Amino acid sequence: MTIGVWVLGDQLCLDQAALQALDPNTPVILIESLDHVRVRSYHQQKLILIWSAMRHFAAELKTQGFDLTYSECDRFEEALQTWIKAKGITELRIMQPADRPFGQLIADLTLPCKIVIVPNNQFLWTEAEFKTWTTTRKRLLMEDFYRESRKRFDLLMDENGKPVGGAWNFDKENRKPPKKNDPTFQPPAAQWFDPDEIVQTVTQKVQDLSQSGTIETYGTADSFGWAVNRSQALQVLDTFIETRLSTFGPYEDAMVTGQDTLWHSMLSPYLNLGLLSPIEVVRRVESEFKSRNDLEINSVEGFIRQVIGWREYMRGVYALTSDDETREIPYAESNWFDHQQPLPDFFWDSKKATMNCLKQCLDQTERTAYNHHIQRLMILNNFALIAGYNPQEIENWFHSVYIDAYDWVMQTNVIGMGQYADGGLLASKPYASSANYVNKMSDYCKGCQYDFKARTGKKACPFNYFYWDFLDRHRTKLTTQGRMSFILKNLDKMADGELEEIRELARSWHEG
Ligand SMILES: Cc1cc2nc3c(=O)[nH]c(=O)nc-3n(C[C@H](O)[C@H](O)[C@H](O)COP(=O)(O)OP(=O)(O)OC[C@H]3O[C@@H](n4cnc5c(N)ncnc54)[C@H](O)[C@@H]3O)c2cc1C
Ligand code: SF4
Image 1 (cartoon, rainbow, N blue to C red):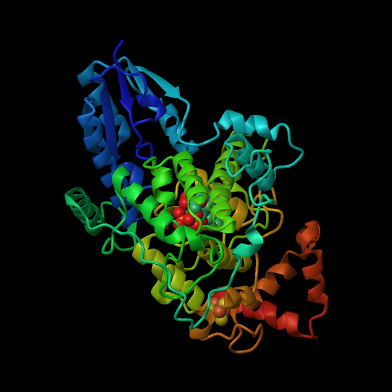
Image 2: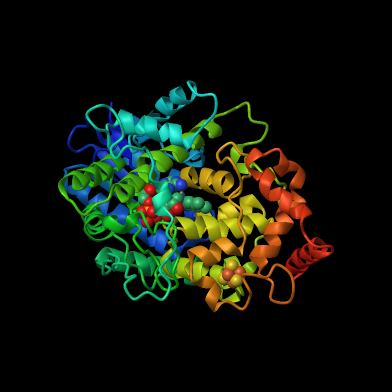
């Protein structure tokens, strides 16, 4: 029997399951497929990151002694067939892809050998463990899962089995608005890297493909500075721990013009590619907390919750819902509010955006392929939700533009958390808010042509009239969501004619 291993582009880790317990010289292949990137208009930086990281990882595998093949082709199948024949492979081993559509692509391959899928070990919880955990619950709650994770991995637990700091969650301390016009509000510089030879070659390839129309892309490659191998990813982790972790918590939800990353870790691209493992990241953070006296529990706990709580939970719910054959429609096609408005052009071209909050976030996406969590959730998703854009178009947009986007993290974050299109399976109420929130948590409103206080009139902020229009349009459905009753009552308190004007403003926005 000759075993060969296909390493997928987001499985770039020497410890990954398919590479374990193999003879030296085992044939290993990595494949750059053009067909695969034609599925949507990916951000140029996303393509540069993945292909550069794959090439770096291929070089690392070669130095480990593997019989390495690196293929650039149109279709995965053609590269695999040629390689399998050339190497006389009888068993193709692949680590289970995190993304279900990729799993289907593998299942549909016609190859002259057996395919063996080994369980994915890039997450803290296996899919089977997560599913077993859910069978013990009446309803899914991230907070319950998070506490279970803390105990299971013995993270931030004291000797009596209680949470360090006396509470499980310090989120209330992590919602400080930015200090507007305060010169002491100085986020540290982000860790970027000069493009090495591999990055330069791949950038040229992506730009040539894009310019020739072979593939459609989004955004610019100009400022590419992402880490492309494990050693650089470890430097980003070091920088985060040294310069950002101490203030990670308080300003986690803040948004400031010209400050793209604030105190966020920027680790998601590397965790999602396998360059860093979630357990090494959280253990490092915990051990710094134990050995330093400048780190507060709200920052450390807040960060650890994102990784062992939210990240694992989103992936667990993705696996659960994707495999649930009792669902009437696939999770990815959910549309609880029946939102059908097409996504406007300005999402693809920030210059066309008139609302300053959206313009700032979209301009940043084009330049960097990155927005932090609150920009994604409370600006872009929130607006798309209240304006009634189609959830599947929004999901496609998010999937196309972000440096860290994959199907497993996209469905639950966009369809579930952002759009509430699953009818509340994941979130206990829709993340919908008016301009008040934007004004409180950012400096965007002060540079905007709209008035954040107005919900009617010429300068009415679209966040306001869409918010009330959303509540009005979906009043019946939202009444069934207990946490919305209080806010819905405010619709009845509106002055005569105000609601009609709000509806009219919303209608005319869509009519252009
Ligand atoms: C609408 C929407 C779309 C998103 N799309 C993606 C995506 O495509 N890829 C992605 O990795 N994350 C996504 N997230 C989650 C989160 O916004 C990003 O992980 C985070 O902004 C990445 O930046 P960071 O590494 O600086 O994060 P930090 O703020 O430093 O957080 C630390 C880590 O926590 C993890 N994390 C936190 N929240 C989540 C979450 N909800 N789901 C998964 N991981 C989480 C990430 O690994 C992140 O690196 C999305 C969230 C929303 C609301
Ligand atoms: S006024 Fe409205 S549109 Fe303008 S930045 Fe504020 S929330 Fe956004």
